[in-house]
Length: 112
Length: 112
Image (cartoon, rainbow over all chains, first blue to last red; front, side):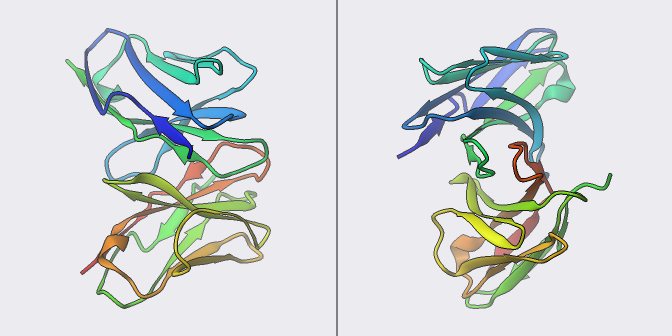
């Protein structure tokens, strides 16, 4: 069955450093991989989407890489700030399919 | 543009009862998806509706059902509630062709 693992349940990073989160998947050939941010008691908020034929995507301090051979995505937050503290979720989907399969999430804490 | 709205935000029910949750998507979005989020299982896909038709379905029992109206608003119904149905129920809308989902704040359901 499809499995998506985010290999750190919790991650503590010093303010100003780069936070790197990992998403690994098996038994899946996604067309798209997305990253969402979720704050306690709120719904996930879309951050970035990367397609299977893209290697890297950037948005301000965020960078996502996608390696379909390794079946892995890395999510980087550079110059991290305490406001970046949240749970980050990766999600996979296929062409024209609104169904998202989510990973287990990584709770990121940026320490001042 | 107003975001996805969900009502009610909080709900307490007892075992055996049924519940109906409501979701209003972003204006212009025709796809509405429902997810269940629990600490143990994470975010799990329930079903997706597009133009009043169920297009995708997750692995949940038949007690979970939904529908979509002509104005794209959607309702989700859970019959014969069980303690394990206690969760945050999230609704997400999309344009139905694009893959990014926009989530509402969720309805927190507690079954006693």
